[in-house]
Amino acid sequence: MNWHTRLLNDYERFSSGLPRPLEPYILETYGISLASEYAGHRIKNPFGKASGQLSLNAHQVQRDAEAGLGFAVLKTLIAENEAGAQSMKAWAIPATKMTVEEIVGTREPVRGQHGWTVTWKGRGWSERFSDYLKFFSRSIESAGSHSMLVVPSVKYHLPKPEETQWNRSEYEFTTSELYRTWHTLREGCMPLEKDFSPTLAGDESFSRERETILNWLRSVPDLIRETSVGKDIRLGLKIFNAAQHDDFQLEMLNAVEHHPRRADYVIYGNRLFDPNKSYEGVRGVAYGGPDLSDRNLSVLSQWPHTIPLSATGNIVTGAMAFEYLRRGCTSFQMHTLFQLPDSEFAMKSNSSSRTERALHRLLFHPSHGFLHALLHDRERHPWPSGSNVLELAHYYPSLG
Image (cartoon, rainbow, N blue to C red):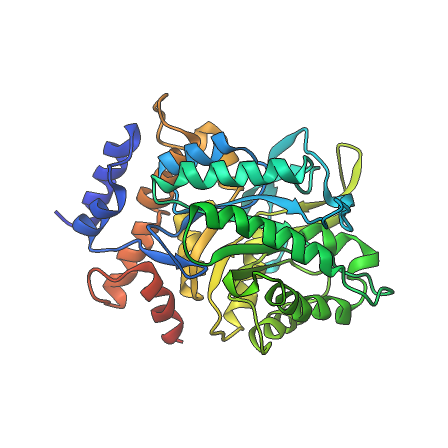
């Protein structure tokens, strides 16, 4: 039986539930190891949930772990100091509603291409810091038995152009408290995502000056390293899509890549921002879809790098994940995918979660799944059977 037929059979066979364990089955059947790495931690597969409204309680995290995700990034915490003061408090807004809608590409390569975007008003964690620590602890516990990595996300103080001082107390208190929670349950360095929100692109007081943004990217790693637990942190910077032209995106990435005490990895790239669109009474919203992935892939194609990369942005098919893999990304963070209409998923079992349906679509879809993309490409560029995702993320960029 050729792989095309086998994949189609598996897609239909697993529409009632994924094989368990998933990764050994794929390795044995297709000669592909899904193993990869995130923040220096081994992950069983490269598919994870991006920070947002779908990772803000322990029940969501537990369901994702049971479904088989490789990792999950928790809802973004707004940093505070020991007295509870938050310099970025304006971002601690709860979301009361999410809207999933179709969107059409406008950039020339994807003009007219249909896709999906999710809109919500909320920005970051709006409850108490102590509640986040409890949530983080419960998430680590529930995910551990399923070998899923849990990663906290934080928005720390970023000075505006007219400010000269950094609120170091936020960096120290928030980071050390998160690490204390991690260290009670896990060994090794704690992965940490520093969120540069896409809404920064719509706040003129923050994003007006290019040098201000570059100063953030250069300074944040130093501030994390200088905390009392800095040596035990594996820091990732989630880079936003700035309002400036694409050349500035490369300048941002190079500022991270070439910094003497650079971050440990990069998440690229956060959603686009439309200053003119309104949602739930708020003017200016972040959005995804074909334009986002087109810009991200275009920028990454021009950026030779050595720093590890985690991809995010319009990853609603395995084929799109493969495009990021070809540009050196070792993992894939998704949010919109888990919100698509039921009609977009072939798995219809009442007992399956939305996350399991998403993994079925991502991996086994016979025309735009991850396995289809890899197997099809292996016929053109043979690589050893059993190669894992981490190795392929280094292999593909080497092809030029």
